[in-house]
Image 1: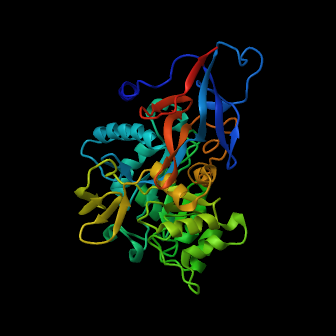
Image 2 (image 1 turned 180 degrees about the vertical axis):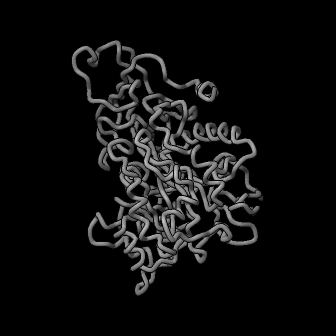
Image 3 (image 1 turned 45 degrees about the vertical axis):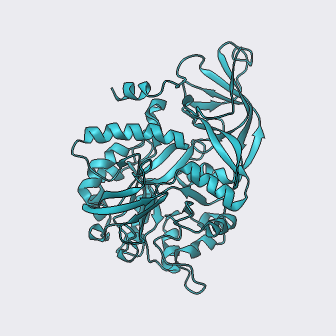
Amino acid sequence: MLLQQIKSRNPSSDSAGPHLVRFTNCRLLRKNTLERADLWFNTDWGRIIAEPLGFYSRKSPQVKVIDLNNSIVSPGWIDCQLNGAFGLNFSEVAQDMTDYTKRLGEVNHRLLQTGVTSYLPTITSQKPAVYKTVLPLHKPQGVLRLAELGAESLGAHCEGPFLNTLKNGAHNVDVLIEAQSFTDIEACYGKENLVFDRRNRAAAIKMITAAPELGQMTSLIPELASQKIVFSIGHTDASYEQAATAIRHGASMVTHLFNAMRPLHHRNLGVLGVLGHGHDSAQPFFGVVADGIHVHPATVNLVFKANMQRMILVTDGMHLLGSPDGIYQWMNGGSLSTIKKLGYRLTLEGSDTIAGNCVTLLESVNNLIKWSGASIPTVLSTVTAAPAYMLGLRGVKGTLDIGADADFLILSETETTEGGAIVIDEVWKFGKRMYQNSQSSNQHIYISN
């Protein structure tokens, strides 16, 4: 029933016709460069393939050829921190969870229009009952290989509740706790959501943001890593030494760098000091919110230039994405809070406390292009190759290599009053075209052999 509803909203879906497709006259994003080459993929398998020989030759009627008119082909984009969108707060339990599931399907479809083909639905600090209710709905769904489901969950990101009350940000301090044993983590999230599922190639939880200095959390990182769950340092008052110890125990990510952590001081580095570790294997990836609010544009540019390979753009987007400016109620850890929305900016009413934002990943990418002056391929690595590497999905996501999932964005370049930018013309998921920008001026030609 759900698939029928989704298909009815996607009349542009290319689910019929030849099973092999060749993109031609295009520039492929590969290894931080734009390579002029053709791209082949199989729509049944939903994967990129090598150019076939013999029967499936370039002139075979079984092949659909699409002239992309010099467009850029990017791997699908990955957002590792998305709290909700288009009216749905992933952390809010509905009276009717059937309605939650329906709205989640709608969100997944609309996310494609922003360039997001895969993401980590982020559940903020909550009471255990909330995690145990919503986490099963956010299990990895890629094993189904159904383009009609829209943007794909790679597993949930639990941002809390094992956070430092001194750096809680907008999180409700009343639900923040410490873990003295792995049993405490299981009691919070549900044991079943922490176990690696071989069929889905992941646990329901893919990433946990926590403060490593609290309780026995640092000593518990290896057990999380054994289930292929990423430990990300965040909402923390950790010293450099404490953060470095967490890295040695297996932490591999830092959540929204600069926000909700000690500021950098030349004699008291805090978490930011671990970005300077001497060799790549010891350097964590780090998320940056490029909305111009969470972090000053010059600071974003500074850390990008310092370590382009490890920087990951995240939105930290909230359910108010797509809503008009105004005052909104927000269920925050079981308590009712009020958020003020003004453009991208979301703050707890009556304070300057940032409560996520309403920026899209496309807007974030264009901001980084503008602020850094870096090439488009270099910037796009922050939403493709870098997050895929961090999540252990190299060769599957974030790449146009043979065997990878056929998740693509077809992009064109444009000029604005503030410089160059990119526009999304089409979005393909598992080899099927799921979104076409009706406003795009770049026409793609479908060639019949």
